[in-house]
Length: 397
Image (cartoon, rainbow, N blue to C red; front, side):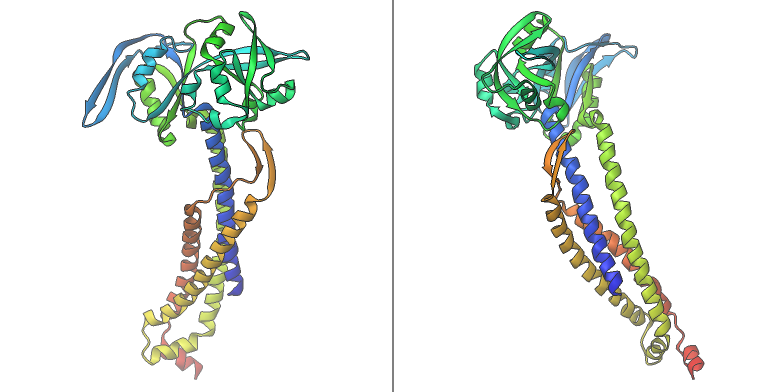
């Protein structure tokens, strides 16, 4: 029985720790990509589309009507950003709207040239759809706001080109060479972004690309990011632009995290199952050894439910001890894991294990343990309750 108790404690605590770890990394990853690329991205518009955007209110629900031909083709970027912005403002679930102009360019320093991805933004809008304000490591947003020729660069770019705040750097695009000043250095935590992306004002980025109008994309913030898929579908069908939610954009990584959580849950559930089987064997042997005692209890008036309750209570005591021990060791293990140094540089940046303190991990661990232990206790208890006292006593005389 002791080994079963230890197995239950280990299974519950291990389940809690592994789920806290895998969901912690997933939550951190989601927070990182939402804070960098927003909840929804609107890019290309359909070339052939007819109709107008009409807002219809019925019972407090806003609906949008727009007709799109089935053979529609895409045109790169948003041609009429103000019209689209006004239409998007009618969606109550959208928290922020930021127009972004994207193009490629090169940074030139005395030592080398470096290819970058330019993101032209209006910083006052972009703050509402990203965590750019909290991602600044050196310099400030105020510096960027006050300088029309200011530039924000990723920390990996700064390291490779040995750039610091207030340094001058040349940006070379389709329309020649532009000298800008480093207003700030940011770190999103996503390696590919930190070593490639720079932020400029919308007007400066368009001047570099030589494109005064069109070609923009929109980045949206949501009050509830989990609603992004349904809102993205509605926007695409009603406003005629290619619209991608963060769930669709990051589907590969989200599937990886989901697979990790499921595989770890299966592994730990197997441990709990083995503990339950061990308890079943103990109770089964106990029933065999105590058959005569059970028969005597039945003969003096104990009912079948009384006999069953004896074994079920023993199972409950073991389960209760396992739950208390498992929860305590699970919480302790989660805390200890969060203190382990772990340097990750890639899809996000962290210097330690990331854990998610979520009550659902504890609830699921307790439910799974309760299921296995209940079955392991109930079957022997039911067998004990079926003992025929007269037959057993005759056989032992």
